[in-house]
Structures are given as structure tokens and as C-alpha cells.
Image (cartoon, rainbow, N blue to C red):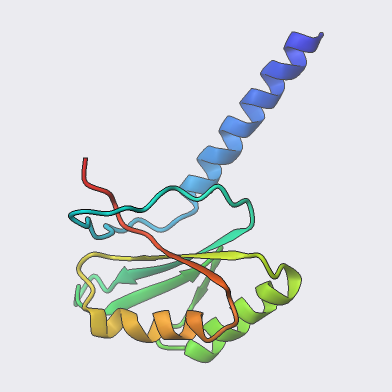
Length: 130
């Protein structure tokens, strides 16, 4: 009986992890040369994903905050959503992901909006070199 419970729990957590990973939009993050980044252990985190426009890869085509998509360039909505999350949980972590093809000038306003939303813990995601 105990073994069945353990097996069910393991199966549940594997399924939840797979669904969580599948909910992130596909993009190619940058690969820094000498990154000292470490994986986050936080449970309360929100992903902000900037996906390049399929017609103009250097521009932001989609902005996904958690499970919600907002209009690219709507910094007010982004700030409002993150402030609401901070009000619910002050220790929330924001994990920013941006497509490698995006120009920094396109990503910077989003970085400033996230920083201005009152979030204390912001992580910028990149793929480490092997």
C-alpha cells in the first residue's frame, strides 16, 4: 500500500513537471560564454517570455507572462500583472526568457518594466555552455 502511494506521487510529479515545461513558449535563449548561473530552487516563480516575431526576428512578436499573453509593448499591463503577483506573494521570483535573435533595444524596456514592478528577485535565463 505504501509503495503504491509512492508510485502514484512520483507519477503525479513527473506529469506536473512535463505540463509545466510544455506551457512555456518555444524560444532559443542566449548561450553565455562563462556563466556562473545556477538553477533556481524557488517554488513561487513566474516566467516572462519574449518571443521573436516570425516576420522580423529582431523584434518582439509575443510576450507571455505565466500562462497569459499580453500585447507586445504594453509595459503598463506587464507592470500591473507583476505588481499583483508581488501583492499576493512578496517573495515571488521572475524568470525572464528572451529569444536569442532579439536585439537588446527590444528587450531592455521589458527588463526595466519588470525591475520597476517591485519584484525583488529577477533572473535572466540563458542556456549555459557545456
